[in-house]
Length: 125
Image (cartoon, rainbow, N blue to C red; front, top):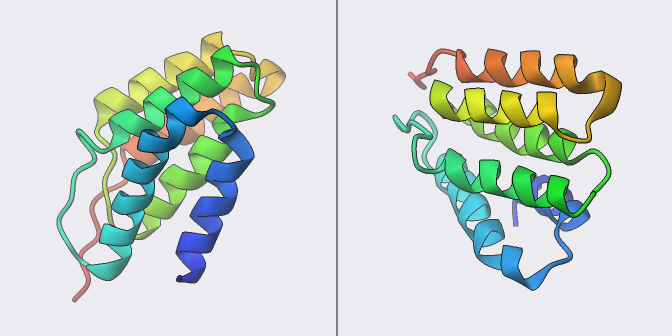
């Protein structure tokens, strides 16, 4: 298991204590592994970001403390691996940040999410 896998698992386990989230956890972790194993791969997170959005919504519904921080760590790992977040999903996450339980940090989270959504795709070369 790579360092990235361990970091991703740590963030996921912090938020996941519910059996219904296991499929989402597997999807997000599989995407992280895909990106780590294929540096420079051209991947847009149009469909793959949806599980992260769903996790944030579930974490927020269950009252998990700082759900957006955990999701941001996952998204940052993906973007650092060369993926690109679809702006539509960035908008949805920003809306969750603004309307969820993230408190006074909502604006900061929303800005970081939108920044990730506009991060240009990096190619290894």
